[in-house]
Length: 400
Image 1 (spheres, one colour):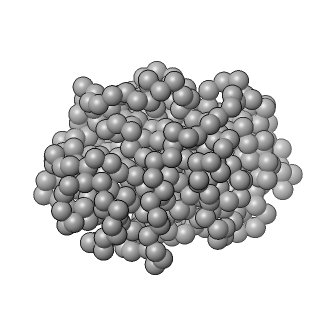
Image 2: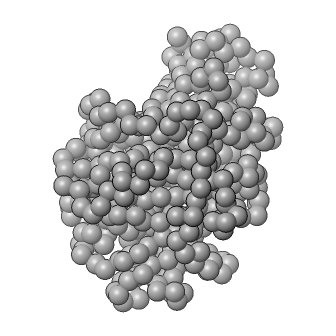
Image 3: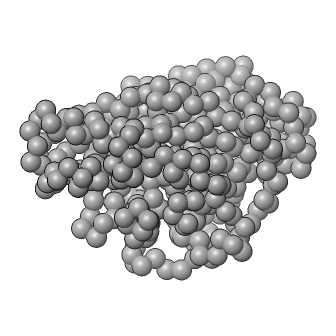
């Protein structure tokens, strides 16, 4: 049973839109470090509903995105779950690198569809502080009709997958970095690794100042598609409140299907197999500097939002399960990616730096509890686990 108001459903705003007044809002991207640097602000709206603003140093665009959870976390199911944003960003990035490499190598592709499955684990007890989130290898199926023979095609696709900046998150064993503020005062960290620089000043809650204009696509950038078709997932869950159980040993599976439309838009259907929930259609496009028109969020924007959303969910889950006080919480996250090996003409595998996250809490709990909130949230975050685990993309090729 959902708890708290359905702010996303009652706001009347789109679930995703370009922010046309970023200067008034006050969000700017970090300095470019290796190709594209993004700053993500996330605020908690109501229980597990969240809103993000993502600013890119390369594209100059700022996007607003919203996330929610389904009945498995007593959410309103009003928007895509946090894990879906990483899947959407990954599959959009893979599509981008495949098409860019095909253009470079004069490979003619007649038909192309990507099908991806991301898997995660949650094991242990929250009350005993033994609960840990994990990430498993990604499965990518490429359905393709092209003029390459089997051997060259496999090499071509492996090179395209390696060229994606997401490769840097998967293969780098990156330990995320943090800074913490409680009630306006900086706290030293507990177990989490510390950012080398200073804690950013709390930007406050500037989200309500965001303005938008109607999309030139004349269609929603995010749209629900109904309940995801069921498929067997070993260790999968579907029951209401199942993700709030104290003792857990479960597997999560988020899928995505991506096609490239004739108008250049990547249309991605996000599938929530476990915990079982609603599917959403999300649109993605690269900005003009990257060869697109910037009519929808790009791959790096989705990836950055997904990591921050997932981390925020773990705060909400921890305090809900242990009945702790957390009146307000928000984060500022910086992410740094290389250009794509094909799309950015680097000819190299994609790279990334560790995520750097500044956390701002308003709570009556002790300093030690505030530190523990951060430590447990990082420990149980599937996408910070994704970054610190050496993962490979399992590739399957189907001729169509």
